[in-house]
Length: 63
Image (cartoon, rainbow, N blue to C red; front, side, top):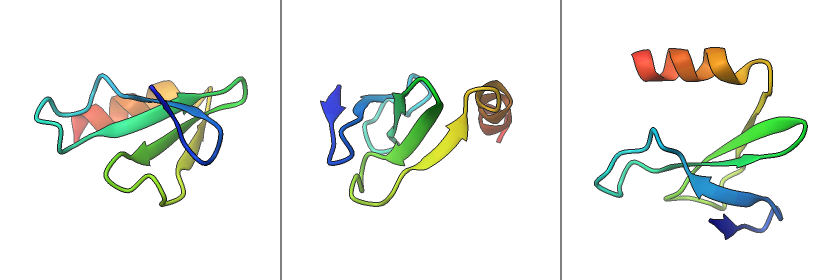
């Protein structure tokens, strides 16, 4: 887990690739899930609301 410039506690998603090059990091807050590409942590993350997170993950793993 790492803390970025945003002050959020980031960790690698369990859905990320095992080779280390396809890493998606997430940070969970009381209001939302924040998602970023670990290869470019300076790029602004996008945010998914807590109710939207399960459908988002289902959609993402089907792709």
